[in-house]
Structure formats: structure tokens, C-alpha cells
Image (cartoon, rainbow, N blue to C red; front, top):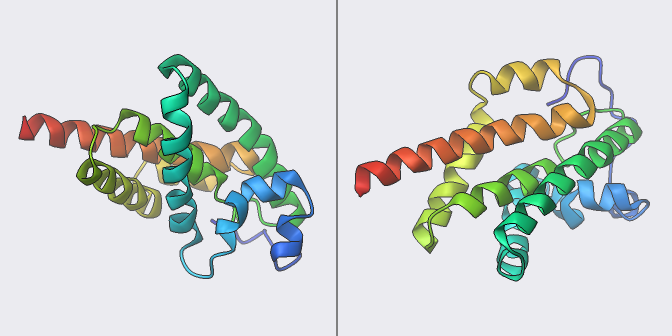
Length: 168
């Protein structure tokens, strides 16, 4: 979300993305450059990352990896946002990647469940019901960028749990 006091200092492109590792990861390996719906493109990046990493780690190590990815993400997203002049520029998608990998970790097995998880996460990340909207508007910098997506992940997971309980 761009607030009124934010002003884009430069138009990010591939040169910007490759100019620093923080930008490369913040932009989801380039997915954040997608011209329409970069958040959706970034969320899609979480699928292959999850499918590759999760089976190779214990559950505890995977959660630890997500905690580290979140913490580093606070710094990376803050650095990238400062250089762009917009604290939560739409192309910064590391927050979607980390949050959606968390959702996938708790999503029941199966393609249909993963598609539903994706849809719910995107719905809550875009709609931003309270308290997500509150934190999106009041928390700035890297922590604000990362935190509202964790809340969207929580809403998606709660919704999945309700749906699963109704179906079983």
C-alpha cells in the first residue's frame, strides 16, 4: 500500500532487482516486476519453493526457516522500500512468499486444497479485513510489510480449518 507521504524515487526494473540481494529477494526473484497483480505473481512463487524445500526439512526446521525468512524479510523489504521511496511498494512480494509458504505448510494435502488456500490467502491479502487493514495503514517499514501478510495467512488458515471441519 502506498501512503500519501510516499513518493516513488525510481521505477524498478531488472537492473534494480539485480542491484542488491535484498531487492532480488524482496521482488520475489523478479516476480514483483509482473505488470499486473505482482502480489499474486509473488504468491505463486511460493508454490515451487514450498514443494522443493518442505519435503527436505523436518517440520521444525521448516518453521524455523520461515521465522528466519520473516526476520530477514523485515530488513530486506525495509531496505528495498527505502530505496524506492515507497515503504510497501506493490512489487515487494517477499511478504506474500513467506506468508503463503506458512499457509501451504498447514494446508491439507491435495491440489484442490492448495488452490483453495491460494484463493483464500489472496482474498484476505487484497481485501484486508480488520485488523489487517489497521496494521497495513499504521505499521510502516519492513515489519509492516511482512506483518499484514502473516495476518492474511492466519485468516486463510482459519477459513481452511472451518471448511475442513464442515466437510469431514
